[in-house]
Structures are given as C-alpha cells and as structure tokens.
Length: 198
Image (cartoon, rainbow, N blue to C red; front, side, top):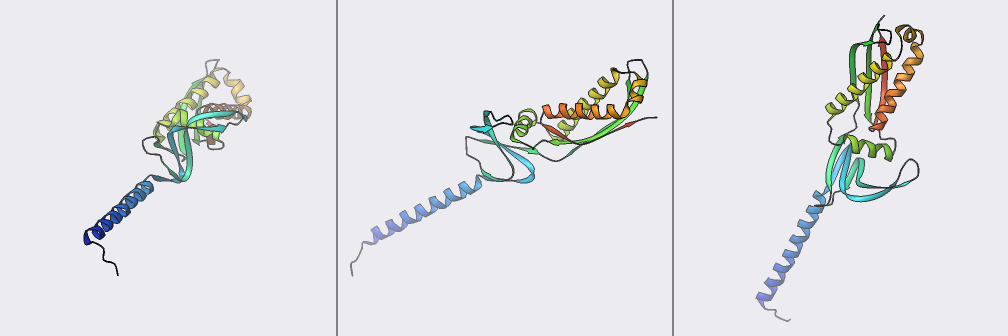
C-alpha cells in the first residue's frame, strides 16, 4: 500500500471542499434569479431585445419580454423586473350633469370595469408602454377621466330630445367609443353600464 504525504491529502480535501462550496453558491445564486408571478400579474423584464410578430403579421422588435403567471430566469445586471396587475379595476363616474347642444342638461350615471388587455402580444405591448409605471389607482383615475370626457363630449353634440329618442343606439355608440379609447392605451372594457336620470 502506497503512503501519500498527509499535507498533499489535506490539500486535495481543501480543494474539493472549495469546489463544492463554489458550486453550491453558484446553484443558489442561479435559483435566486428565478422569479415567479401569480396568474393575475404580468412580469415585465426590460433590457434584452426580442423579436415578435404583431397582430398584422409584421416582425417587430421590443426591448422587453413579458410573462403572465409562471416563472422566468432574470438575467442579472442586464434585465430589470417590473410587475403589472391584471386585476379588474372598477370605475364609477357617479351622476354627472352633462349639457346638450340645445342647452338642456341630462343626468347620467356610468359604471364600468376595465383591465389590462392580454388578448394578444400586441395589446400587452401597448399596455406595457403606456401603463407600466401606473398603479391600479392611477389606471382607475385615467380611465374615469377618459370616460367622463367621452360622455360629456358625446352629449354636447346632440340635443336632449335627440338623445332621448335614440337612447339605445347612443348607449352602444358610447360603449364602442369607450372601448376604442381604452384599447389605445392597452386596456379592455369588461363591463359598461349607463343609467340616465328620468
């Protein structure tokens, strides 16, 4: 049986222990860079370019990637992680008195619900570009202001008599206008209700 110097054997053990320790630290570091989000949250990772096909089949480039629920590795020092809520935001305009083109006043109460539109990658990208830094309260305030302005503008272009005569068609037009306005900033209208005071 060969005898190995005790010093050499201790040195080999120290090197092996060091390698194992480095591998464990590396493994824990990699695991710490895996971030998870629930299904009602959108993870936005900025910093790396990626290519995608938009809703019109055009090739586009974005400086971020998104994940709705799940887990992803976040590249250290290269990517920044932000979160966006995908929960429904309730809007309640209350009763507003809007002037019509003939000077009469109509009392309208409107409620709606909106959320970040995740129907396609294009809508998600629009929402990220417009709403990433906004809280749910900011989104609520922005949406309510847009809804209030749309209601007042629409009523200001017609007489009170015309509004009452075409009420059903006008409701549909208002809803369509509100949906189009929300889509421009990446929001989807979940519910829309309009009540007119007698």
